[in-house]
Length: 337
Length: 298
Image (cartoon, rainbow over all chains, first blue to last red; front, side):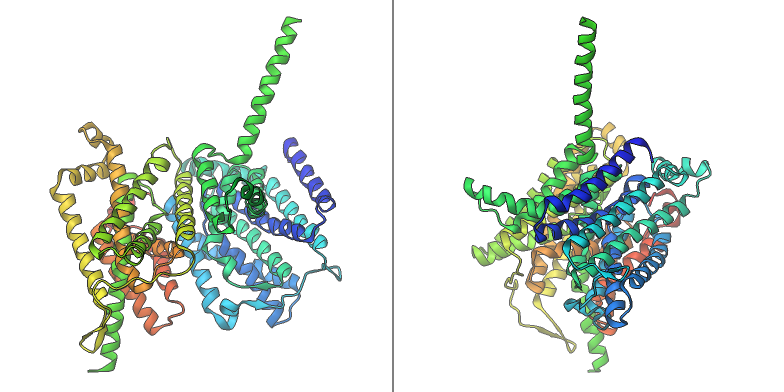
């Protein structure tokens, strides 16, 4: 890890430690825990989209597969959630391999549509395979995770646990970026032909990073299932996959920190909007939660039109401009002195 | 009459009716793709918008079908033009990823707006000419299905005339083949891009209007209609609109047969599995030549 990133990483750890001291309300801790699941998926997706340059509008499917594997194995076969999570990871690896090999030969729009189609198929199966998935009614009674025989019962415990998983994910991702593999991925993002001519096996790289990002999504799905103890196909529709790439794109495709920023901002957006709606009512605007979709779309469009690099790099470019401004004035006074 | 034969006939009728809609969505995809190289992820939303506008005008304002039809199509065409002017045209030197996300953003906005205006429920609309089923060799056929097929034929005929026998249509084709060369020949290519969005939105709206009496439109149908329409476009070879029409009807028929003989629960998955297979095995589509496939980037 480079200096800037290790500073960021420690800041993340610090924020995770401090957060439950500031947020004592169980509901908001719960919201933050859901944010962690999205963050984990988005870190994986960012490796695929931002670093390897391959779009996937199908990662909601991997979240669903992870969640359903955990749900089915823990309730029907009474397996330990940990073993079920591991099985989910193995299953997702196999599926991502089988889908990734033909899909990643495609580019751009074709790849986007293929992954979107895959996500829809998984959703249709989750609704239709009633015997296995419980259909629209879903699966109830998924047990909580236990850590060394100690069940994670309170929201605070699960908050720490979920965010430790995010921190671990970020650590893995940052290490990967500054390895031979990470540089290879960035090279193939720039130009596949050039990367291939430098001896990078582009097919293998693309499929491997696709599988790794699918594992992130699967773990996030398993953690989600164990947290809410109940799953149904509703949260795993195509819109969820779209929302995931929205998070990565809004935050900033080209950095892990951007993806994290986007995931946090958009996961908290419904809360922020319902908080703001009280103030809007004072001005005379009746805000309803139904408008959320419209606001999501609007934010995404505005960011893509005016800040295509995302919020995170937008903020950092503003910061560096401010620093430059101050740097110049400091230099100016030196000359004057 | 043999009951197995009647079943097949009934599924074929269902399939052709669905397929006609996929065909028109696919034509819409192709128009924008030919003009800009963009796959418009908001294509399904045009269909929803057309259908819902028609519901409001006929059931809410009690306008005549013909008048409401024209107004709805114009409304969606304006939406298409606005989309192009406000979101596609201002973006200079866009990357594919950015364009994809922009059209996704537009689709979320249209979907969100549709949910705000029309609510979450599905909307009933009266059939164009009665809802009494007709008997067709033992199978039943709705008059609306005949309207769907008839209007698809009209749209295809209008498409052929427009692109082969009018100056504007020929200009659009020139832009699709080589934009730089077309510009050198004095064609305003930016205007052609705008026109392609307007026409594509118009075709989407027509598809939405004619299918609404049968499926009862709601705000969330756009994604699935768009995805299946894209399946038809790819199956017919992206950019090839006549191929898309044949592929759309074929996809609808395969879907209806699959729903009838395999499982109706997995009906939506059938068209999507076909889409994936085509993308994985032959992304140039069933009518694309191997030669063209080597030249194109997929």
